[in-house]
Image (cartoon, rainbow, N blue to C red; front, side, top):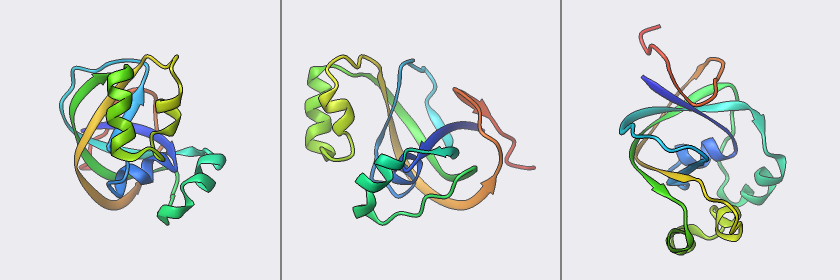
Length: 130
């Protein structure tokens, strides 16, 4: 199964259905199931900023399964969509007019029991049968 490694607290915000878009500088044609892997690094400033959501932030493990249903170029029009969706969670993209990457739309979120494994860059594969 495909896996995407994401820094905490962003991985947990996705796992709890709060963050519905993940941002990358590269686009993907992949659509379908993806495991969300909480990387070992933590954005401490963001952890404080998003403390109001009260989510657990484990590291070094797969914590959720989602579906990538779209890949959207981030432009001024999409920033308006993000502003309406959740201006706190997407604040860094809304206010960074120089960001010109992509938003992976994540749907059908399932929180799963943690699977402790090392992460990788990009979309990578993991055999769930291990």
